[in-house]
Image 1: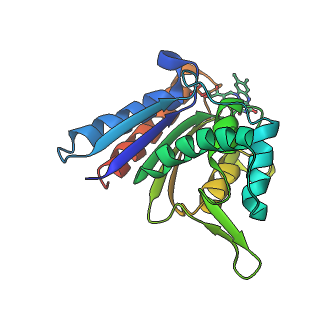
Image 2: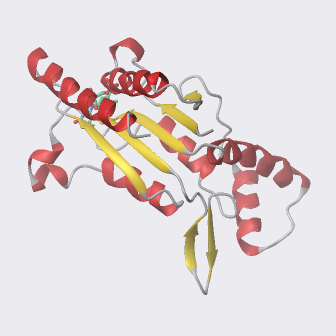
Length: 209
Ligand SMILES: Cc1cc2nc3c(=O)[nH]c(=O)nc-3n(C[C@H](O)[C@H](O)[C@H](O)COP(=O)(O)O)c2cc1C
């Protein structure tokens, strides 16, 4: 049995290009007939904890091998639940729009919650940083108004794709398939063609899981 965790990041729901392509991926995945499990996290519906002072202190206690105080213990338990839920999956599907050349703050918030020492990564002076979420794979479906793959100049403004691929790699997920939906802030035909091309790739990739 393998588990897919789908992380949905656009608030536009049935008007969202990234969700539309992700739904085609999920339909193919579900139709595959094997006993795969699916869990969905809608980041606009999920109440994420604040990454506040107690949580930061708890993080540094973990990093420095110190004992946390009671408030820090509670804060760290909350963080651990989110990280454990994330780690329970075998494959990840993340659909997200580009916002201001990067990712929406809800997705950054989620990453700030789950990217933690001792939970999803470790550090030792001998080995440096090690990802702890290993043996897994991810599919990224990235919608963007512009066409960042069309030139090096535009590519240099893209902090969505490189950031997501880097942070997933940092926590140990290096088997990543990235599907771009671009450009979307254009005429109807060009947008439809971008969605159709991404859907074709998403369906083909879902069949491989
Ligand atoms: C707040 C906000 C910021 C955006 N910033 C960018 C941007 O920096 N570059 C870009 O190409 N498109 C940008 N867009 C456009 C979206 O990336 C584009 O419409 C995408 O298709 C949205 O995906 P969705 O339909 O799944 O929500 C932005 C849209 C919003 C709402």
